[in-house]
Image 1: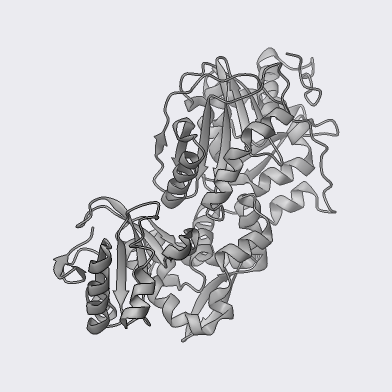
Image 2 (image 1 turned 135 degrees about the vertical axis):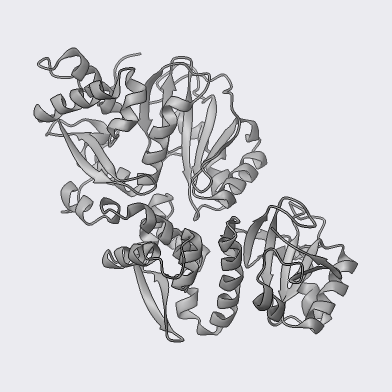
Length: 491
């Protein structure tokens, strides 16, 4: 296989070790020294010395960056001949997708059964975000964030074979031995598995979750074939230099990790209070981590506040939505339409309901239980109704065991007709899962109607009331939830 035209040979003036590091960095733009050490096969002190040699020769430049990982110097080749993804126009695209970069480079030495690492290639405009080649095969890598729906993920997987065929450099049609996903949280992991099963690729997928830091899924690769390469025309910089883009990026600041986490919370729960952000971080009311994270995002024009009931509520700005859209490789219009990210600010009549949902979610957050916003799940069952919940939570313990559950905060449905319409999807035989519903009802009378209708439909359901929830909280107390008349505690 010939060397790609967008690679360059290291200068002859370099030592042999520095030349090897130059070649390794060439395939891993914006890698840290920590990323390069396990792939270089030499001691960390040696790698640092070789990087200093490259820096002193004027061949590399570094930028302090961190979104999902602690801020560190990320290195790039510099100069007018900087090849491939080291061109500033393409580096700017990687800056937008920094979480992918931070995690993919971390995965590279951990891929099992592939032998020694040989080459990494970022892709643009393709189903996969990147590919990595090893001694005995290769893998495709994907980032999946909260703005990617199950249908979007399934569409990317379905189009993978055709996309790879368009950029193949081998005689045989290319196909990876493993599909590695990095996902933003536990719910996104669930969506990846559902999407992969729907297209017959469940056995190929392994997933790394940012929130619980766990690998799951396939642990051994299948046989892979062929290889690919994508030569790109570098995009223009639009008058913004690389240095300016880094300076005006919140991930160049000290609080990048906490700012990134706060951004996820506000994106899912527009109109949230500082209280909810503190539940996510796990800090007391006197804590300042969440506060300073939001201040940083405000300074960069990513968040803004809306005054309501003598408190500041946080919502994304248009720039904030664009930041997450670019991270998740989604069009801005898709993001705004799917997430309803400004609904709290623009539709005041929803605020009482949304505040009730966020109070419920905050109780689960405080117990360190995985949660997700309801707009991230949408199951239309046609005449069988549909499931469009207010939220999702993963239950570690309860009458239905370890399972995801749908949350419904219902202030208006009280009569049998409205309640039947609300529960019809949960009782449908067409639904894709049997996860239970947790329904918070307006009062005792409404709860009795929900239990009567739900029992007749065979709905797996726990109910509570607004008052009981306010008194006990959603977790730990058997006095909050009722399993058709039987007291139930969640944990």
